[in-house]
Image (spheres, rainbow, N blue to C red):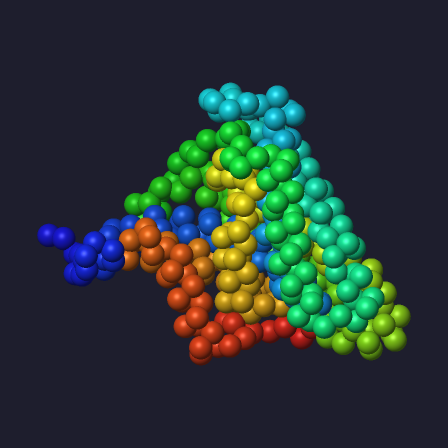
Length: 331
């Protein structure tokens, strides 16, 4: 007996049975995808917390990291086709090299973006709207630059690690890729949270986020704090890109960050933009919601469900689920 209750002209369904049977598969896959959203969202939330700027070019910083990962694999001698027969130590070594390369390139891109696009505006005390328009323009400029260099098509997939089932959770298969993505998101969030809350540079970031003028009077180098903020956001975007390429090996394409970036931004808003813990929570919740929505309403509604839930949450919690700004974060 089918559990599809409504099927209006074939464009929407309400498949409760599909949601129930795929619940744990969707949960595991949603947490893995949400981990990637969370890592990208951390960059959005850090920059917003300090500058009150929505850095729309952050999605292209992520894409640059994806290309850096692919190029690193290529330079290491890997090509498209069958997954190479590597030992566990070799896989970890090559992924670490690719991850470091992606983080370095994304971090450098984020810092260059700050120096070229945003610092001149700060020096001229430009209004916030100008920053926002510049961020959108920088996003398109980076995207088109990647298009000119690498072309319209996605790069051929290079996969070093095949998804292998590790264990079953309530009947759903959990693969090595799922575990790596979720663990990586939590570990990198913990590192970022520790950096912001427990280190001297982190205290500078929180001071500037709370009151930039007073922080400057107290001896905090505001410009250095801003550069560090962009750098940390870029490093996290590079790490996210490497893990994303493990999940989607053909993910290096010039416009690959558009929808992913919007969803990561939505995740940051959902959790409470300017809040590192909110970025992690928002990313995981968004990953789960869109997967559940896909089973319930059909694959075409996956993105719609994610953004509808965002709107509903903001109607009742305008500052997001946790709703705490970086400047008010607890020490």
